[in-house]
Image (cartoon, rainbow, N blue to C red):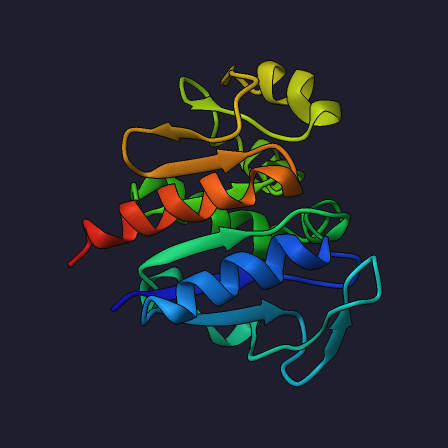
Length: 173
């Protein structure tokens, strides 16, 4: 089963982390949270989810993982201020490893300059930024590009996001 790296910090959208993470775990995959500090507790913007960080960005390599998960909320915008997280995400895109980004998650991919020539979607307020980054933006509940990049717009899209993310993970086996 896949080892999934999850870049996460405070102000993530609670259900955009908890629901896909549960779906991944229920399917037998391992989800690892990564932030600056191992053991730190990060809180979702709704205050419903508190997550203890599994690993520090300084102690991991993209080679340690099979896929990358980028939940939305304000977390991706905060993380993209740090080039370590941007490079981590870029490495997955360059290697064509599975990347799952929902809502504001694609902001890390915008900063990584990793969306050019790709089909994707994201939260309405970042769609124009995605276009400027070279993506073909589709306003659909889930967009799968090259059976590698899975993107969705918002919490209502989580069932489709989970379905397609799990389908892409099945192809790793």
